[in-house]
Length: 61
Image 1 (tube, helix red, strand yellow):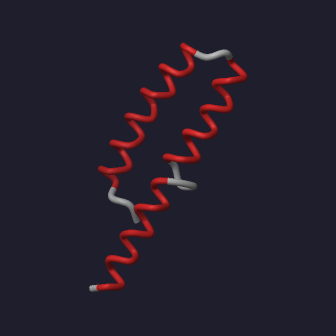
Image 2 (cartoon, rainbow, N blue to C red; image 1 turned 30 degrees about the horizontal axis):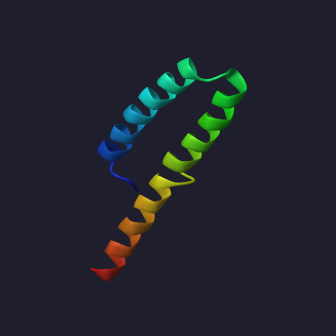
């Protein structure tokens, strides 16, 4: 499991990024950007990478 503090830090910054993007983009552009950002920083991306790193670290111990 990914450290909740790391997840919280990622989510706070992602929320800010999405807020600015929503204000700056057309709705259809923002929808696509939001999907990519959530995929990359959510469980399909970065958080999954962290979980994999954590599992590998435990296997080596």
